Length: 330
Image (cartoon, rainbow, N blue to C red; front, side, top):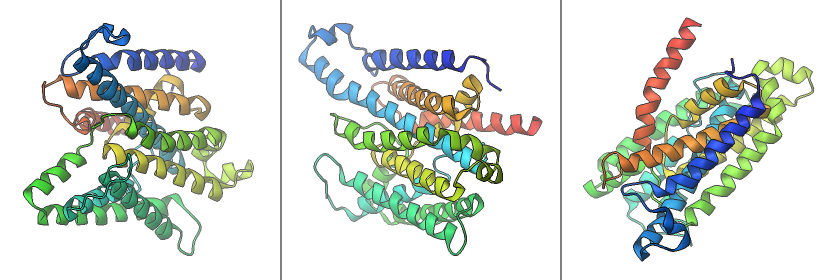
């Protein structure tokens, strides 16, 4: 049940909070920057840190959090499972395996503006998406249960292969793989912003377009079909849209867990279960949350940066337990 009966007001409030966080977050990190950096009254190093590191990091964090959150919202609606996450279907495991194989190979094959590890990660995620789709359809129609089972199977296979690759890798490669698996905003310049932007924008646009269908899918496939929804086609479109959004985010930031599970629930508590308002609320809440987590990861033990995936996991574990207890009581 929503905490407010005025979803539009809540949405406006979330927007204001998001804007405030986006405008102020770049000034905070391992060391604080003066607000005078905005109008050039700062050293060259401070200007470089602000415009080439802090601002792109905040932008990528917001896009990644928004993409993971809205994808988690969509999976929870399609599967009618509150514990579903963007990584349920093995996309993150496939991306992680692709990144690990790239590091283990020792090849340096960067594209203009795109690191090779991001390319390998995206290809691994894309392969996982195709495998899940192939296994879940086969000779039958697309079903949530089939997709879940296929996703779990692919995830286990990729995770097993990932452990094997990490075991046979040299120490330096193994450490690099482990560091990537923790997730983080290792950003300098705006290339990563433009790498992740198309995936988040396109995936979010698809989910906003199908917001009415998501409301009906939550109730049940039969009811949705009786209201004129082409259930199979809509689920397929949502599956590919969300999977490619997650793949694009993971390719740039690594697998950052729990954002896609926590933030849709928090948005639902604030604004209700109507996807017409829940979708933009999930985008704003997820983006704002990950920006705050990213800034926190750089402040806790300066001058070192904790991988942001560690911070989200520390927050997500207790939230997961709370969700299980709450559903058990309900």
